[in-house]
Each structure stands twice: as structure tokens, then as C-alpha cells.
Amino acid sequence: MDIHNFPSKLLEETVNELANLPGVGYKSALRFALFLLNKNEVEVEKFGNTIINFKKKIKHCTVCNNISDTEYCDICEQTNRKHSVVCVVESIKDVMAIESTQQYQGVYHVLGGIISPIDGIGPSDLAIDLLEERVQKSEINEIILALSTTMEGDTTNFYLYKKLSKYDLEITTIARGISFGDELEYADELTLGRSIINRVKFQMNNH
Amino acid sequence: MDIHNFPSKLLEETVNELANLPGVGYKSALRFALFLLNKNEVEVEKFGNTIINFKKKIKHCTVCNNISDTEYCDICEQTNRKHSVVCVVESIKDVMAIESTQQYQGVYHVLGGIISPIDGIGPSDLAIDLLEERVQKSEINEIILALSTTMEGDTTNFYLYKKLSKYDLEITTIARGISFGDELEYADELTLGRSIINRVKFQMNNH
Image 1: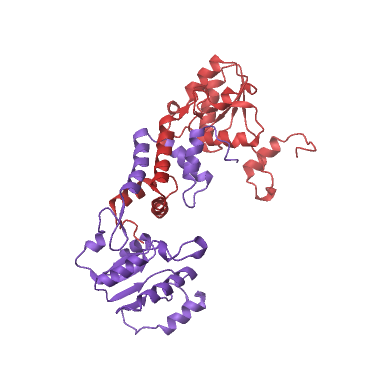
Image 2: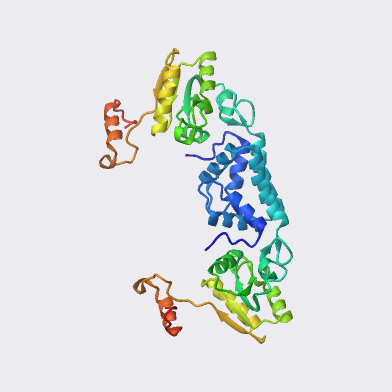
């Protein structure tokens, strides 16, 4: 169906706005708009204002660049965490993913993206200077690079390594290997090779 | 990942609102929220206000119940259409779908749903009284029932037929049959059977 045959300008504008959302096409946007139309006015106002308010009031933690409602984020505020270990991630989603493993006691540094010349994102668009400042100012013993294993991730890792290797700290990267539940025969050669080179001592509860 | 581990109350509220949209889960809602966060404040305000404005200002055509920016919708305003033929549909989406075929010259009546006792939708929740009033007031020769072929669609068709059959007009329903491009062997028996019973004269440009 030709989705551009709108019976109303107001509907058209709304669908156009909603279709900007990532992964949302015109059909889904129309579905969203008609869904919102079925809600009452108070609910729709709450919907719109929550989003506007979010953008207006949200802050970035002045230490780690994570999003926060206050000047320092919840994680940086926690005194029982190891503030000398900093895990560098691309986005807030990665912080949430690592936090939900409940395996990490250190703090984070959110770059806000990775170096990607194709998308016009260079080092100066990311919170890399903030990270270097942080390394200079506070006592950091270890930087864990936890970026994705793409070309852009590798580029960013390399750039960060060059920037930070002159400081007295350990630079590590998260382990790459076979996922739990994966069959060896279907694993890619790079991952499988790496998992053999970086093998760890067998432990009864950690195999 | 445990998506409920929000670093910010504002983010959490926004994700909750966005996750209300049909077919949107928490992961997509988070993606939407972070996408909006990357936009500038003016763009996000436009996004939110467009939606609020849409709900506040949109009208329903007082004749056919289609959505409209004005008292009468564009279609009802068109004098070159056949106002004596009314196609009854469930929602605005169906109007848009039929309009895009460019095969229909009549007008519409948008019920705003179909009778569905399970969802608590009865005849009084739909624009059925408005349709009956319309039949009484204006000169209508034909009502085309174009609802979906579900149990609820059939119930609604039956209800409308009972309501409207006492008036001097023809009640028709859209043709059911094999879609263009479909193979007969994969068609369901009901559709195939109906397409044989309701066969039409072969024409060189209409096969």
C-alpha cells in the first residue's frame, strides 16, 4: 500500500517523525501513530513530554561520560567499587550489559561511539580526552578495553593504546573465545584460534 | 542483558513510555531513547510536540469518522466521488490501502474497530450508529462491507447486515479469491472454493 497517501497533514507529520526512529519504517510509524491516537490526551502528553524532558534534563557524568540524572553517575558515586579499574565501552548500552553480569567491580568510561571515518566520527568526537585527563588526575591501575571486534573497534583500541601506553597502568582487553553453549565446529577460525592461544587453567566451576 | 538496570530515572521513564508502542520491546525502546539522546534539543522537542499536537488537534470527520484536520475529511469533501456508495472499513489504514489502489470512486465509513467481545469491544464502541444515521439521512445506494475475514469481521458483517438490510440499498462485500501471483496448490480450500463459486467472465485484461 502506498503509505504516503495521508488523509491528514497532522498524521503525516507524526508518521514522519516516528519513522525517523532507528529500524522503524512508515508502516510501523503509522501503527505507532494510530496507537497513540487511541490513547487519551493526558497519556499522549505524558508520552511526548517524558521524551522532551529526558533530552532536556539528562546529564553526562563528568567523570565517566555515562548518562546520569545528576553530575556524577550512580556507578561513580559507589564507594565500594574499585575506582582504579576503568572499563572503556562504546555506549551506555554496554555499561548496562556488563552491569547485568554482576561480574565487574570496577568503574566505566563511556566513549559515546567508536572511531569511524566512514561515519565522520573522529577521536575528537569521543570522550577520549576526558579519559586521558582522568588517567592523569586519578589513580588508575588498569584500563580494560571492551569495544566491539570490528574494524572500527580495533582502530579505536589501537588509538587508545597509543594514547595511554605512556602512563603507568595496565591495558587489557576482554577475553574473546567460544560462547557458552556454542559448538566448536561452527565457531569461526579466528575466535577458535584465539581461544586456544588464550586458554586458561581448568577449574571445576569455571569450565 | 537485564534491561531494567537503568543508570538514570529519566532514561527509565522514557524507555517505559516507548516500550508501550505496539511491537516495541525494551531493547528497541532503549535504542529509540539513545537515538533521541543523540539528536539536539530542538529536534527532540519537535518530535515530542508533533505527537502531542497530533493527538490534540486531530478531528474525526463528522460524516465518515475518518481522521481529518478539519470537520469533513478530504474524501467526503471531494464532489467528484460517488457519495451514494459507501465502503465500510475497520480503520484509517484500510482507507489508505484502498485509496492507493486508485480503483475506488465511492466514499468510506470508518468503524474504528470491529466487534470483538474478547477485547470488550461491542457495537456501541464503533461508529455503527453514525453509519445508520448516515443511511437514513443521505441517499446511499450501496454499502460495501470491506472488513477482515476473521471471526470478529464476520460477526461485525452480520451485525451490520441485520441493522442495514431494512433500508433500501444494496449490501455487498469485497471479493475473496486467489491473490495475483499465488499458486493454486498452496491456496487454502475455503478461498479456492469461494473463488470457483464466485468466478467471473474471462476478459483479456482482467484475468
